[in-house]
Figure 1 (cartoon, helix red, strand yellow):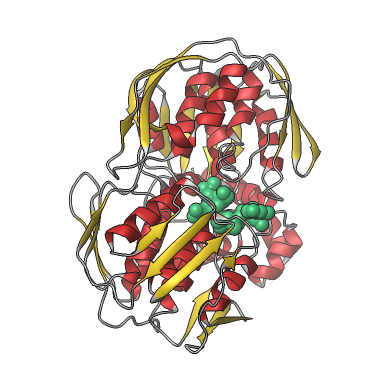
Figure 2: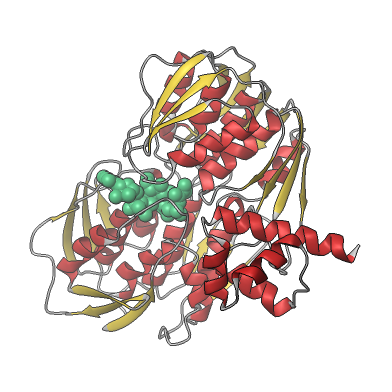
Length: 508
Ligand SMILES: CC(=O)N[C@H]1[C@@H](OP(=O)(O)OP(=O)(O)OC[C@H]2O[C@@H](n3ccc(=O)[nH]c3=O)[C@H](O)[C@@H]2O)O[C@H](CO)[C@@H](O)[C@@H]1O
Ligand SMILES: C=C(OP(=O)(O)O)C(=O)O
């Protein structure tokens, strides 16, 4: 038994090492040991101390050998046909923006039905370490946030901060609170280079200068500088727009932001700012005009809207399993192009009349899917900033294309490193050809067969693989699923309620 256990751990370490693209020699150097020791460990011929296991886990940035609590792997038995109804939860991306924006307010912010996901947990850890009081109020996931009189950055939880990219959105609010501060480099999914330069140039007009030092950004604010002309964003990015909005909210005067994103999380942030008393005009367009306040101190209650990406994920689940399910609370205005394309590909579905989300603005519908024979679209599928096919929804078209008849081309121009993960579908029987780092060609239909895979280190591709596993004959295992929990609350459990068979487990 003992040898068996060592062997299993050895296999896990080998898989995680390969996944990180390291040789045994490179891992040995990281750990200050020899290549032959790594070889013995991977073959299960070496006793391992808990300390060594923890160090290996750290070096490989992998939960595979983590000894912490909580599920880390998923075992899926298929094929599955889903049935029943499911509600779309509120969005990760509005959730994290609003957590950062709560720092603008000296009063109490209550956010309703916040997605209880790891990305939110990491940001809460960071906020708590700055002295912000946060409390989950009930089973509905209502969250109360009370900032302290003075923020103390000396004890910032850097480990938590480095695990999320969203911490970059502290820049906008913090520049009003502190003259100098350090923030750790933002982390998040492994999607290739995602620079923060657009954030710097958007915030420079507010007097913020940022120097990248060893492992962190050193920020300094010159209060004599304020925006004198419209801020033109160099990219129509979501978080950069949010940073500019948050900086403008506490700038007493009018700020105009051009080439702003009008995406769903930006809109939620604008509605929240309005509740704070900040005037925001142009919501839903690419020019935002903000009349800021010198101080904000109000008790405010806000309900972020439903997540269009989760809605798309559930649609993809229904399509790949050829199921009829009802997806309730779909934020249709952020999914219209995706649905139009799916209709073109042959999807049959019903939709209810529109109703309004709890934020008082976003249009929702319930969708009921019907099993359909899909065919490849004539043109390539490519995302665009809103109002375009959502950048985070593109990966779901890979698994949809895999069940459609014919050849589908996907062009992921946005991320250098994301399309490549879609080729993992091939391990389940898919025919995905990487044409270059940004383009894949997918040939369907697919005869799915279960397999054991490491989770790709990127949220949406990871969920795409999980959804394909629902359709696979036999048992599949997806290892190291933190990345999924980063963006989805109880996804496996909620799919099980629709009839899926997904078991969560840990090795050790
Ligand atoms: C917390 C949050 O809200 N995250 C979302 C946000 O991240 P975020 O706003 O951080 O996205 P980035 O700024 O990293 O932009 C994504 C990529 O697109 C490129 N880019 C973006 C806009 C543009 O006009 N031109 C351009 O080239 C960037 O250089 C980058 O490589 O927006 C991304 C794109 O919608 C989404 O995938 C993320 O889920
Ligand atoms: C890329 C994503 O998010 P983040 O910006 O949090 O990495 C995503 O939600 O798919």
